[in-house]
Image (cartoon, rainbow over all chains, first blue to last red; front, side):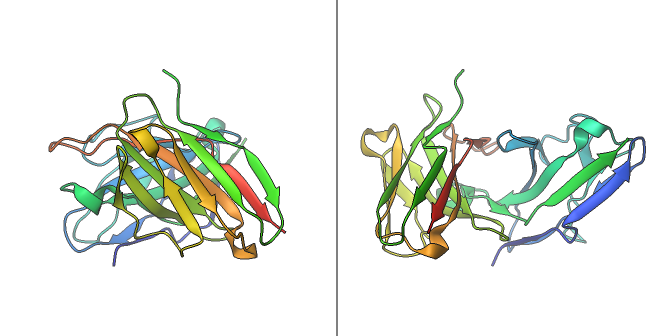
Length: 112
Length: 117
């Protein structure tokens, strides 16, 4: 069974501090990993995906297949980063593999 | 480009009543997904349409839930009869038909908050 685990329900940091949101997964095969973000009163939106290897809004995430992790990191947190962050995975190859499996989410609060 | 829209934004009904949720995907997106988040739980997949066909409905909780996508455009999700445990936020997402090189990004709607009393 595929599963995504986000161990921290809440994470609070001060502005300018580094932040790391943890995500571990289990999947029999080669998944695609994503981070979605939901800002207050906004819809869920894609932040980044592992295959694009981009840095979005200063965030990066590296897929570690050995540890089955996809932690989200930012060296200097900003107040506008405060939001709910969801780690998600999907399969590859079409068919029923495109559905997303989500973690429970981590609420990040960046304090001034 | 208009995003995914959902109607209504909120619905409050009594146990045993029927509710129909609607999702309008981004124009040209063949793939349409329904998800829901029950309070305290993670967002869970319900089903996936490719055009008007149900590609995967493995997440539908029971036969009180019926999803349709006639004509391959908008989709409806009907709950009949509604039960207390159906309360939650129902999300719709759409994506273009994915190619081999990378799966299509799923764009989410704002969700419909359903409360069953």
